[in-house]
Length: 254
Image (tube, rainbow, N blue to C red; front, side, top):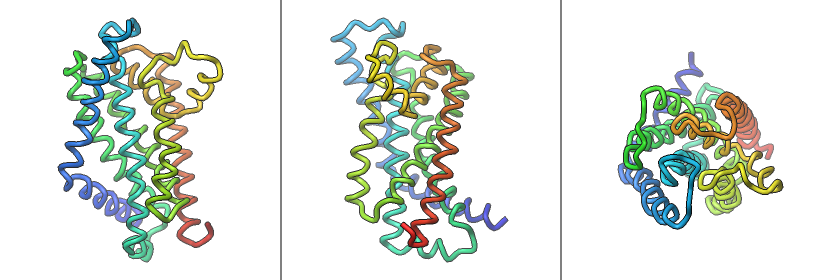
């Protein structure tokens, strides 16, 4: 019971921290809309795209949701570093809960912020001419939760390897951008060269974007159940990895 209360308390703190910054919520919604409207319209008018009946804007819509989840989830791992620098993490660690519960609470809190942003974008799908049905909305929401949890724990894994914001941002530059560009968010992955396709299928975000595209547009490269299975496996792996590395880090073994 104490572990559940600890997880809930940490989740509540992370969620309140996100909700209090209204500008952060606004920016996280406006930025992907700018991608959709400006980038989607500009590039869509310059190429002939026949992959989706609604055109290029509708094609990249699930990818932009994946981009929003990726950036929010992974970048939020910096909260571990700031908590460590300001001494708040020490106060958490003296509480009668395990370090694994601390990680789970933070991961759920971070994924909640990503889920809120993803759901808002789903509700704004009419901007690009997508008619969001209730089944598509529910399936997409479940996918967003799983994707957010896995990527949030990935951010916590990265935070376990560094004690400074500069080091964290440096590592992110080699992780976040390649993950986004190699996810198929902006282009179809079916006609890629063999070497590039191999890198794309190693990227867990690829399966998230493909699953969202299947749920929203009913167009995908892989069956939805395969995408979902890979996402669940990725989330489970990152949860265990982040809990293990966090415990090692705070015990001074890393």
